[in-house]
Image 1 (cartoon, rainbow, N blue to C red):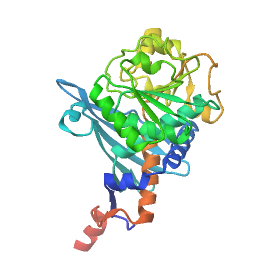
Image 2 (image 1 turned 90 degrees about the vertical axis):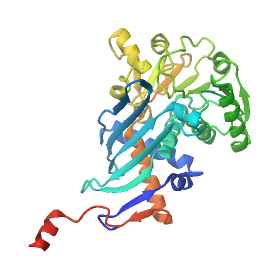
Image 3 (image 1 turned 45 degrees about the vertical axis):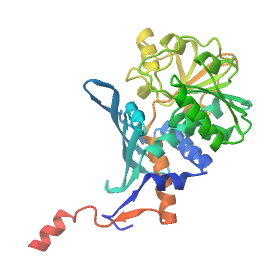
Image 4 (image 1 turned 180 degrees about the vertical axis):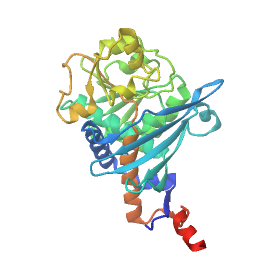
Length: 346
């Protein structure tokens, strides 16, 4: 593509490119984590834009650079407006900009919410594989019946094909029923149960995914969880500090997750240190740390959500789309170089 042009990929095109590529997306996410764990990345803290009198709403900027074989820079600009659901709109919307690491010039603009959901799901599935390595997963509990947990279900079924049952709970029962219907239509091979409370989800589920819009912790004990189970704490603010402190804690990035009043951040404030965080997922992937503390303790994966994952999956999307000719190219998107135009006028 000529310098100065920019490739545009719409949501439908991004979704089409990634359809059926769950294992490839998980591999891209794995490589991103390993590259970050090796120090070949740059990951400033996310910036939260909040609004007076709208505590649930936010727009977040996630700038990042990922080295290794990717060598890509960029930024995700992602909004979360939960009340959109009552308007018939998705909670989240996003754009992802990819920049050249040689010139800094933007090369592609991609619809980012599909990429964000799938990289989140791939991260969750990868963590589940690590934390439950060698174990069969017959039942998967899902707390929160929105897009993120739906994608997580898709990716978990790709890595745990033996899973037979999804157990669902949402405080809005109509959303749980809608989620169940969509799961049965999309994942015909798996049974779906709708639970009446959270405890029913935790009970007998060796793997639980929590993806809600909770602003403050509400789960104060995990006595219903089987020994050695794993919790994918995707929404980050569901577990009380005491629960966090009682578990085997794995995160994506220690500095990133210990901020913005996440459950892990609240636990740090409670005890004044971070020693309760055993390791990062990259430590497990690189074998710097074992997969689990022991076979009895409940493991919790709390991922803040790193911009490097969006870059890795965004690059995969862009490269595949360019191969298939799916992109729209805007020619001469960037202006002519000032020095060149100045010389012409002279």
